[in-house]
Image (tube, rainbow, N blue to C red):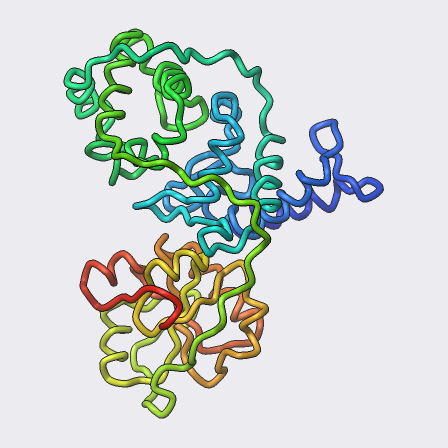
Length: 355
């Protein structure tokens, strides 16, 4: 279903071409929107959906939802794409964070998202906050924590208590979201239930959760080059791994770790953005981002098992595995539980450029 959704985007783009300009929704798409659509399809659709409808993987939010776009400024979208969201699988895509996108690409993605922006932008209520954090904390625990997690992080949906989100979200944006909800998503309206003061109480609680954090400004940096591929495979003279399952099947983390300890011949491929790899990766893994396989394909061994992993736990790694199979690699598998389980079991991770 996900593959068809992405194919559908390409078909729509192909059908909409008119004299080199895309015409969709009764209007011509600008050049930045066209560039953004290409970047979005290549890098973002795997989690946020082919039409930015959200929830394609890891409960990634519906960033093309018109009700969302009506209350967020471009700067909020730019900093989210640039810096990512700590504690989630949302990568820092900016070259300023060692990611693959420069300023031009990021602003193009924002321009493309704005093509879904079809609602009027009413003036937000940015008046001073008048809530009580203690009352708000009790309301949050009762109404919000089941979806957003204790103190707004760790839940299955948007980490609204994360410092980086709150640093770029205005009080008016938070008021409108809590009051009106997010039609088309699981976020209900709380305005009638809580009233103006109750909404402010919840925001006061969120602000109390917020650590001191200032989002870095989006640097006008050029697109970063791909990271160099490290040594592959691991244990080049080792035995053949036992128990690995070929794509589209997956292989349990325990099995991969057992074969690593046995000195089996394999390569561990981190399918995430390069910024994620530099922040933390499985020991011995090399960076082969799912969205940019071409620079690495000729350097990967065809006689060794390639174990793809991400943190989703399967969306980006599954995407990379499919592309490798399409390129003729036959020994390809996906680490079943992803980086999160590997880390939780203390199987060993590293950071920086070296595997």
